[in-house]
Amino acid sequence: MLRKRANALRRRYQRTTNNENLRQERKEIYFNGRREYEDKMQEAKLKSWKTFRTINDGVNPWNIVHKIAAGKIRTITRLTTIEKKMGRTPQTRGIQ
Image 1 (cartoon, helix red, strand yellow):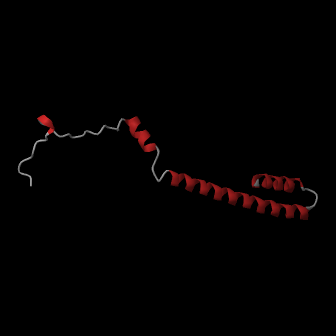
Image 2: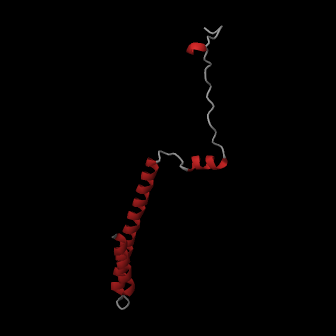
Image 3: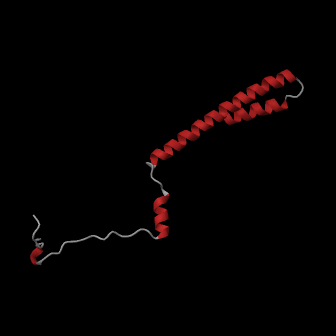
């Protein structure tokens, strides 16, 4: 909505050629409208960026993609216990 208004003010300013006082007045109105539009756009961009950053919790979404592509993802090796007959685990000696 503000972009349309800023463009309309710009066209009105540029079409005024005969009356220098009116042209100057419309120029000031146009620059004020453009400044308002740019301020609102900057606020919206900042708000959108902050929302994006809070959704991602500061995690870089490309980290895992890069690791997979580079072949750096390894499976975790789990150490398991040895089971004796009848489901008993061996006792360690010397550890208190």
